[in-house]
Image (tube, rainbow, N blue to C red; front, side, top):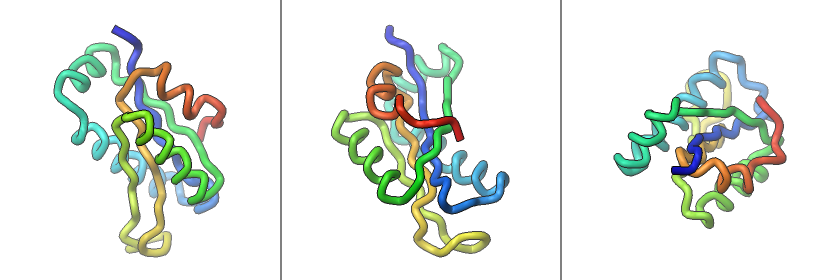
Length: 115
């Protein structure tokens, strides 16, 4: 079995507070896991549920990685904020990629920096 992980991409340009960003990351992670198949989730859980949070500079960049992950048939989740607290309604805040094979995810996101 290959190593599994999940990455969550966060828009750095929105300058969300730590709490807001944490909530958005949680939304993305949970939503992606809920859309994954049970065997993948079980294998990921057995290996420690590795997660990495990375930053992107814009909505355009966020969507670029989201679309690349879809093209690679990876589990994905795009989070759009309701706009009730810090940011405008409809703002795309985060993308989760995986859980999935680390080698496939790293091919897409390996150049990004830690959030």
